[in-house]
Image 1: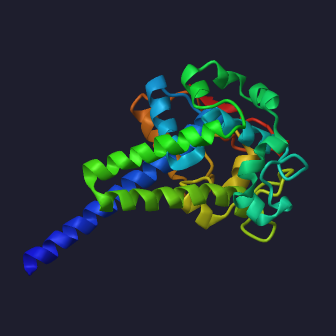
Image 2: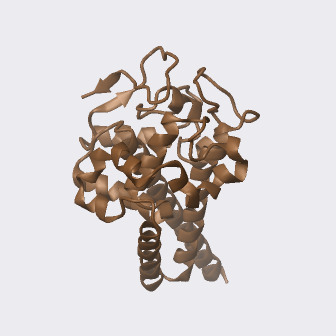
Image 3: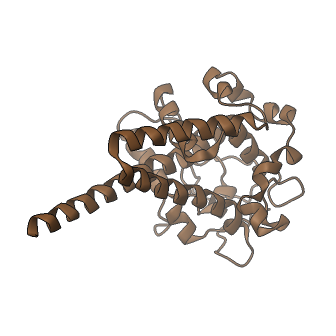
Length: 272
């Protein structure tokens, strides 16, 4: 009996470990790979690490990186105004996910290409999709399913279940940033930006630092989103670790005093 209890404890701990690994890989794939690295160029890493980070986001069903980046750049340019692809001003559930099959209504493929000229030169990024079409999400879904079939075959059903749970929470946390963090009745504002962005602590925890959204809209290109001591930003801590390992440079940090910035404003302090 004691050995059985001990085995159960080990299994629970092992599954908890797997959950943390999957949550961090998929979550950082979005926060660092898709968002701070590709979209805002907040820091630089070697190409192999860039692809490894982006893969974590891709396997969490974020779709083609070029499409994701193009939509997010458009969001910053038109945040909470006409043309913002996922503002809760068009409805909470629209911002939570309803916008996903309507992105082309907000951004033509030509505009997408203008937004992402920097990524179109990368053959792998382009191969994953460079248009608002069904092809990109179908390819992403297929690759993601094959990845989870491999998990099942090599590690079994429980590890697969843990991966699915971690992926679901990570996916939801990203949508909460788009929706909850732009609601007028939730969170707080540290900066008077021209949009409705808010800092929401629990979204910040779930999304590995993305929930300090008002800070982000004030300094869009900063690699650091949590600016106060209590604004936990795990993604920023990972950037610091990568810097210590010599794997990250050109890190954009927030200035000591943050001016009110229009959409698309930039930070001014770059660590070489």
